[in-house]
Image (cartoon, rainbow, N blue to C red; front, side, top):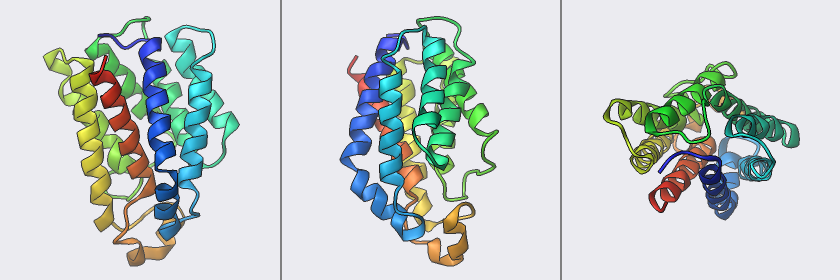
Length: 208
């Protein structure tokens, strides 16, 4: 199995379904430390992504279109960061059918681009607590000619572990930062939604 536009469509649809099913929980988590709208925001961003992936274009063009459409059709940090990630992904695409190693490079490029938009790192109680471990897990398999199922399963496990760790962290970014120690004891909504998305990616890749 190769990473193609067809697979991307299925992955994004599964991710949308995953966050839609948990949007109320995500809003509740965000309400403990922020505006209480992360579930609504991530669903809007994924809807923009699933609409954009249906447009004509190569895999490279499609990923760039997704990025810009996510940022144009939704507002806030969620759409800005997600859009930046997809645009970054597009910059490493070299064809229409990518093997495991090439797919890792695409996701690494997404991470590199998102880092231009945020200084948050592991331990800061943000989505990066799930995203960084996910991409690192993919990178760790790069030398072993991994299958896409192996890549995304490893990424999903790492993302979930990272997301779970945010319960014991103190927020250092966003509105939650103002709470200081009071932000400890709750999961970060962005990290949890990231884990949901990568679990959906993994389930899709595993069933292809």
